[in-house]
Image 1 (cartoon, rainbow, N blue to C red):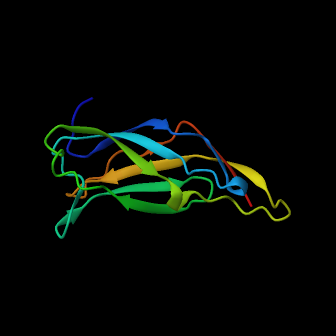
Image 2 (image 1 turned 90 degrees about the vertical axis):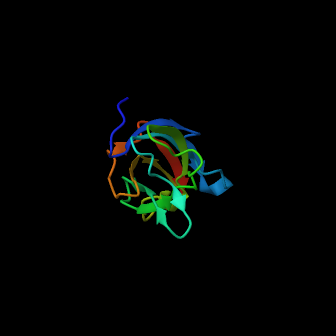
Amino acid sequence: DKYTTAPQISFKKLSHNAVDLSINSETPIVTLTITDAEGDLGYIDGKDTSFIYMKNLLTNTFDSVRFPDLQTVAKGNFKADVDVTITKVLKCKSRPGFPLHTDTLYFQFYVKDFAKNKSNVITTTEPVYFTCF
């Protein structure tokens, strides 16, 4: 667990691994552990923003979410668990002739800090089983 200028992330857990659109089930939350030597992560209104980038590996859907305001906790040798809702990239693969099917999804994540240093890229180790139309 060395703190580096480029943020480092690791997959910690998945809140649950099944989503069924036919019953409007909840979107899973991915928990990442993030470390950064400078702690230059978060959102500062009107000044700077760092982002969490995510990609659905089945559909190649890519999007990002900004960090919350971390000014009160983001200091040198920063380490925290961050929960990410994957709604923006929770997509199924179109399968003509199969109106209701289940896809097995994995996701990639990385972050960038205020200095635009890119973290390592990680892939979730647990799948999300997504039943969709």
